[in-house]
Each structure stands twice: as C-alpha cells, then as structure tokens.
Length: 439
Image (tube, rainbow, N blue to C red; front, side, top):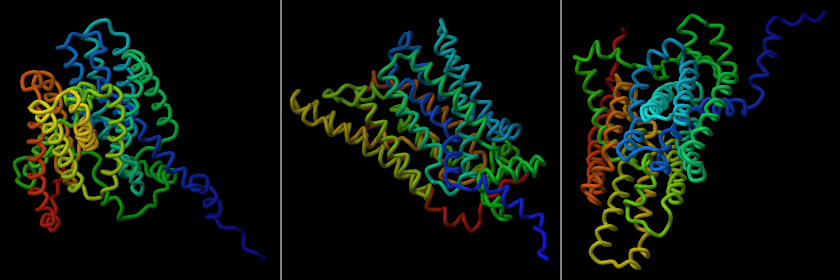
C-alpha cells in the first residue's frame, strides 16, 4: 500500500502562487519604489515652474529651497518612524504628509501656507529616501535597477514634462493624485521588511513576507544587510575616534558635493539653462532633454557596484560640465558675435548634459562609505547645505554672473581630490571594519 502524502506536500503547493513567476518580484520592486518618483517630482517641481508661482522673487527662492530643508527634517525623523512602523509603514505615513503638502500648494491663498506645503513635501523626500533605500536593499538585492535614485530621476523627468504643459496648480494636482495612487498600491501589494518583523517578534509575518518577496531564508544574510537606520544613536559614542572620524569624513564629502550645485540645476533647470548662455532653444525644452540625461546618469551610477568610483565620477562630470560652460561664456564675451555664439551653443549644451547627468547622485545623497555611523544625520546635514545653496544661487549669480560656474567647478575639483584621498584608505579599513557599539 502506498504511503499517504506527508504534511509537507500542501506546503509546497501553498508557496507556488508567490513563486510562480519572476515578474512577481519585478512588479513588487516597481511598486515599492513608486514613492521615489514622487520624491523626484518634489525636487524638480520648481525646475520649469519657478516663476509661475504667485510669489515675489524673494519668496519664490524660499519656496524652491524649502524642499531641501524639509528633506533634512525628514531624514532626522526617519529613524524613529522606521523603528516604530517599519520601512513600509514609514513610506505609507509619509504619503499622508505629502498629500497634505500638495493640497496646500494647490489651494493656499497665503505665502505662509504655500511654504508650509513645500516643507511637508520635502519631509516626504527625507523619509522616503531613507525608508525606500533600506527596504529595496533588503528586499530586492539582486535587482540593480530597483534603487531609489533611478525612480527619483524619472520623477524629475515626469514633472518637467508635466510642468511644460500645465501650470503650477495643475501640476500639483496631478502629483497629489499620483501620491494617493502610490499609497494605495504600496498598501495593497508591498509586504513589510522581514528583518523589521522579526525584530518585533513577528516571525510568522516575516516568513510570509519572504515568500512574497521570493527571498531565501539564510542564516548569514541578515549580517550582510545594512542596518535600517543608525540615526542619532551614534551621538552617545561620538567622542570615540572610530565613530566621529568616518562621520566627519562623510559630512565633508557631502558638503563639497552640494556646494558643486547638483540640486541647484534640478531646482532651477530653466534658469540654469539661461544662465549658461544658451539662446538657440527654449529653456523648457532643454530642461526636459536634460532630465532624460539625468535618468541615463542614474542608470549608469546604479550599474557601478563600487560606490567610491560612482561618487568620484559624479564630481568629475560636474567639473567637466562647469568648465565647458565657463569656457564658452568667457570666449563668447571676448571674441564671438551673435552668430558665432549660436553656432557654438553645442558647447554649453554638452556642459549641461555632463552637469545634469552627474547630478543624479545627489537626488538620493550618495553614501560611498558603507555603514558609516550617523549616516542619517550626515544626509540631513547634506540637505541643509543644499537648502542654503539653492536659496543663495539666484543672488550669488546676480552678483558674480558667469563666475558662479568656475566656483562650482572648484568645489567639484576639491571633491574629486578629496574623494580619491579618502577612498584610497578603504582597503586598509576593510581589515579592521568600523563597528557601531550596540545601544
């Protein structure tokens, strides 16, 4: 007589609906990173709509820069939100904040409410950049394109296209609708982080989440994943050299990165095109084309597994772009007439392409040193510097004129040199990896 099937037989059939197609994980990766598209739309919202808002010049520059300030606040809040609700829960909560921000941007009749809405949407950027990075790194480790920077760059492209066709209020309404749709999709389809579920004693839910994400349970894998958030806990041990030295090194790298103005060109794309001396095509059209190169740059940076090389290459691209623009403007002012300026307009266009494509790494600030203590604080500090640079750019350009581009080139050159010197010590540090004391 044949033996009856064992209890493991139905278990195998139960798992098949979650593992029957490789497209399942691809769809989940796509949905889980849809919020990053909204982040890109927020950062690029003023790129082609800067002077369409019912604001005076001073308040318009505040509006453009407040997204970075809100992102800094979001990064600082991200740790406690992720620890309390998980990466998925943090993403869902941030959607509520973002919808409020978009609604204020559409319906506000006062400048204060408009700026408050901009801060809310900026906070969404900070929370999502942290939570989505943690979630995608753990849940989709084998899909290089499933990284926040790629989807964020697509968000910039989409908002530039939309802003070229619609006014600021209509663009905000479209973004609010997309935010609500993203909330529904994430709520329905995306499971919570298995690591976070296990850390809260929900092992059954964690196993179910692994089945949906097609993750193989491996006893060694959790140690390979970066921590969800380090946050402010490192301050308790900030007096130790192995804690504050890598933190300060990362902060200096991010400061030089932001001083080379990668988020300035994203926030002021149309004005940046005009400031570079191009007169042959409309700034809106060139901005949309540049956003396409931003997406291409994000794909290239994602394909590079070596974080240090991607950071140095990004600064080199900004350096090359700034130099091309500076040389063109100098030669035009000294030698060229109107016809010659138009014939050589390809030079600043190439400079803008290099500048924009290399700026992708600042959309989700690059952390070239893995597991640096206090990286969330460092990223928040980076966004704060970006807030200052974005706010100051129109005034600095008004005083310095085209000399602002050599300044950007100088900051990028310093970042290249600093990156090479800092990263040259990384092989030595691998032998003695830095560890953050448990708290």
